[in-house]
Image (cartoon, rainbow, N blue to C red; front, side, top):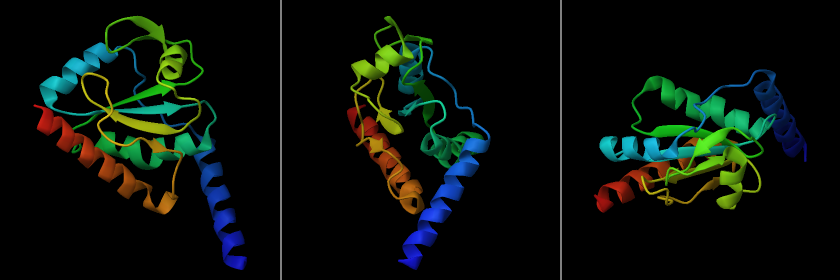
Length: 156
């Protein structure tokens, strides 16, 4: 019981630290243009479906996605879509929509969810829902990216 209490306390501290300052990722604005870049670069598109103030979303941004973008070694296009946002967005077909409408059309009801898609907007790997087990999230993310790359490569 003591170990469980300690683990819960550590998780709460970890999530509280994540809320202290928000990490920015590129917001999706034109998924059709991202799809073209995906084809040219043979790179999957990673979409983080997020909510403002979501501690788990911030942990994923800060601990996993921002460092991945910063090191530049991972050939992947990363975009964030905010579930409740009215920010303008062009979908994969070039149609005008908003972040919130696009998320609803994709069946996204809560955050965080990470999806890896190809240039056609179709999933290339199983979505990562929630934070799963924080100690293993990096491995889950790496596996999903690897699966997405393999599927994208097989399709071309």
